[in-house]
Image 1 (cartoon, rainbow, N blue to C red):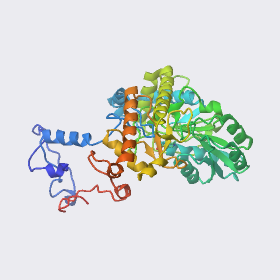
Image 2 (cartoon, rainbow, N blue to C red; image 1 turned 45 degrees about the vertical axis):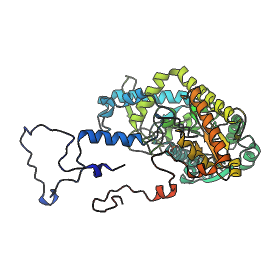
Image 3 (cartoon, rainbow, N blue to C red; image 1 turned 60 degrees about the vertical axis):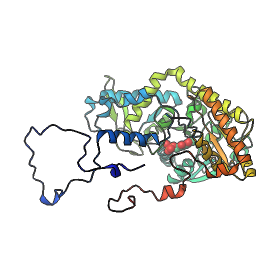
Image 4 (cartoon, rainbow, N blue to C red; image 1 turned 180 degrees about the horizontal axis):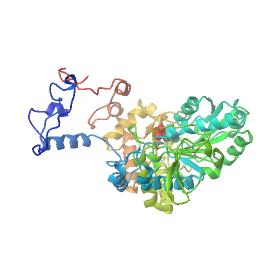
Length: 486
Ligand SMILES: Cc1ncc(COP(=O)(O)O)c(C=O)c1O
């Protein structure tokens, strides 16, 4: 496909402006700052413009086009209505420096969202500031660090993280200055309690867990884990990126967690991926309230909302202003439209869909940890090697049948892993189609593996050198270079 610059032809316009009917401003701009010639912009007709961007959009695969089961990423369908709400002018045009009395509605929305999320997580207080899950993790770890320092636990320098954890967990703990200690998973895919007991000691600052974990399995020993942690004056940190599996069913706050982050851009109606904008609020138990980043939104007795900067031991600010406000608007709209029962139902369906697909695929694929799962499950692709292909070849071929690959090679503890999270909004027909495709591709692997090795065949671009594509991005157009791109 040609770039818009390559379609440009001098003098073509996609707009028509009325003649200037006011006096031309004669600002005193220094001569050397004035352009000698106009900017080099593409010049095309409106039809060409519209067709160009539609063609470009049609090359993109998204959850609005098809099945997108990226395990752990919760690429769920986000209702268009919430996008509409977030694009209302009253929200979109707000300025963060506006006086509080002119943004009471926005403050009320944030205040209520804080309350909803506190209720959903079973925690006491919350900040909406962090801009992503990993950012929330770091914020949570910094809160834990400061709390421990203030309470004569400066020597506590270890954070225990399961071997199945998302990579951001150990990274966040390390960034906050802790040493990461890995706890093993047992044969059922849960934290190995015996290993855990050996690792906890007076140096343990915190245990970071996601529940259900990244294998889609609920850590049913969570109460015992929390008791052991607290006996050792360690805090329990909840990575809430998997909340979609248990929202309205089980609350981390009731299971002993002290600090919780949420991924609003997974569970609460903002598309996940492509670098944001996201939102990773951090909720804490009341004893950690004074450490939250400032400000939080509060309400005076007279009903007026305000930004509360009076947080004595605050770790400071972790992001400019109040976080990604429009993501908060979408989360608020989602919670209100789903209601209490709707949120529970979403978790139930996410779990039902995952178990249905798991059972169907188990007829011809190895499930890494059989048994009932929550919102996702992991296939072990080891047997593919018998046919001279691997998981990567297998999932690239799925693209030719119009479905997006699952997350692959994660969690690291499963050989040739494929991690599938269908989410709650997929129909039985879609899941049955997916099963048929997986079976078909497996048959191809057995009978004509070369098709997989070369896949994908029908996509706008064929198989990429993924490292090169990441490290040597070509994003600059060179007008005078005959190759066009730099
Ligand atoms: C289990 C888990 N934890 C943490 C994160 C990090 O979230 P973010 O991508 O918003 O930084 C993810 C992201 O996919 C995740 O799956």
